[in-house]
Structures are given as structure tokens and as C-alpha cells.
Length: 223
Image (cartoon, rainbow, N blue to C red):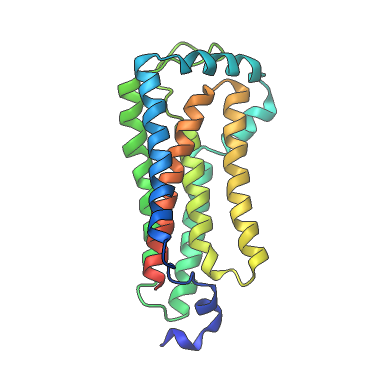
């Protein structure tokens, strides 16, 4: 079945990149990569940025049930099922619409989620950063796995879902929801004292890199 018989799918798919978009893509991936490298260097070398990080943490930490609930939104058991459900829905819609390689965007989103522990766990082991005074003595807090999980799971879900949302308002709402959930997790982690602010900031950089790569890939195959 031709995709031309389904105007909604065709109109919702992103248009081909305009001239100058490669530079925008390089900025989207390059800037967070540079920031992640800077943060990681500061943590590994115990640089001066850690003093600011610790002062900011002391000002923000205020353990409470609300902060715990927000942090829990970054649990694998919560965030990953959301991505799986959305990916399954998008794949079913694409297959029903007769889209070629209907499975590819959903598989790409799920594959991105698999990359998160493959990147985060080695960084945790290498930097071996201690936790805040609000948690029991331990190491391996940098970067924040919960933040990376939330950013990639909710962000990838939004990107995979976008072509199947019929209005600009719905698409904006999907992106805003993903950003809000990820920000809520980040705030909860810092507020509860589960992570230093720099742990969370590094995972945001990682999330932007991975989601930027997914966005560029989805635009390419949509052409």
C-alpha cells in the first residue's frame, strides 16, 4: 500500500533538511559533547567546578517525599515501559499506514535506550565519584543514570510519536511533556540529595546528544 493514500502520515512526517541543517546538527551534537567532556574532566581531576557544585547542592538539598516521587519517574521500571508502549503504538500506526520500514523509527528509539547503560556505567566506574552527604557512603554517582534514563526514554518516546500527532499543538504538547518529566526527575534527584547537580547536568548533555542523533536519523529516513 502506498503512503500517498494516507495524508496524515505524510503531512506529519518531518520535511527534508534545508541547506545549513548539517551545521545545526553538528552544533546539536558537538556542544553537549564538549560540555560533557568538560564536566567529566572536572570530576575526574577534582577541579574547581566541584566546589561550586557542592555549594549548589547544599543550597538545594531538602529531602522529602515529593522529591523522592519525582526522582522515581527516572526509574527504569517507570520510564522504559513508557517508551516501549509508545514505540509499539507508533510501529502499529506506521504498519497500518503502509509505511516502508515501518518498524525502523521504533527500533531506533529502543536501541537508543540500550545505549544509555553502555555509556553511563563505564563513566560511573571510571570517575568513581562519591555521593552527597544525604545518601549512604558510596561511589559511582557520576553521571546520573536516572536522569539519562528519563531524558532518553521520554525524549525518544516523543520523537517517535511526533509523526502520528495530527496538530502542531499536540506535537508541542508531546515535546513539552517529555521535557517536563525529565526536568522533574532532575529536580527530584538533586532536591532529595540522590545526586550532585553536576551529575544531573552531565546526563542532560548525554541525553541531548543521543536524542539529537535520533532526531537527525528520523529526519533522514523520513525523506
